[in-house]
Length: 261
Image (cartoon, rainbow, N blue to C red; front, side, top):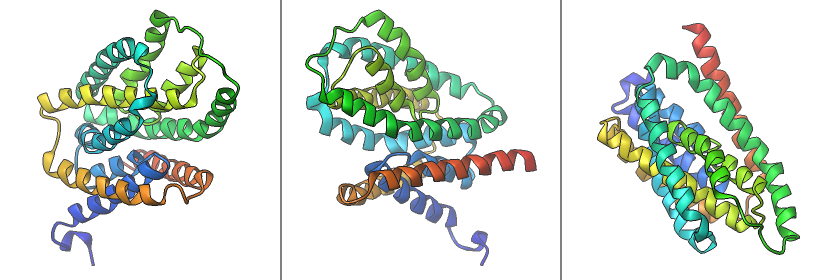
């Protein structure tokens, strides 16, 4: 049976994709590799699909932040918060002023870049954990150079975002932060804050399709709840491999789609 003959099939597809995305985010990350293409697949224009997907997945980031709040280094919050506000708004505004055709051509490159960053996050996280195991005290971090290094990353998070949290962790580690728990907590702070101001920009500009957003948000949350119950039992490397393979296939599909148009 053709999908067009099924009443509201597009909602059904979005439900399935959002559930999978929520499970992926809870167990390994990379859920946007599924939910964002699903938004496009049900007929949402690329720019609005990215804006709507960002809103739909943000509550999951907020829940992660609530869990990790005790590990946040509060001395870095003023500079990190300022950079997140500036970068997130700038990224969101740039997205909203990007032509649909231009953003559609960027999609496979953005997904491929996010996939590569996600794949690299595994070995780099192992290095960070080994480094953390031997640390005694974090060195003072120069705030102005840190802000300048994080600004383009927060811009990228506001514009598209996949893999941005890993870049935040890498930059903080290069600037001398050695506690893995603190790195992970500040990664979530940066992603949550940059996306929050981006969301406000999307909402004010009317770029969010709320009927699709509500469906995706609800079932991504349900998927996150299910995924959290299985996260500790799953093999992390296998899950990471599945996410990387999924992202690569989706990027390849969008490259093929461009050449077939």
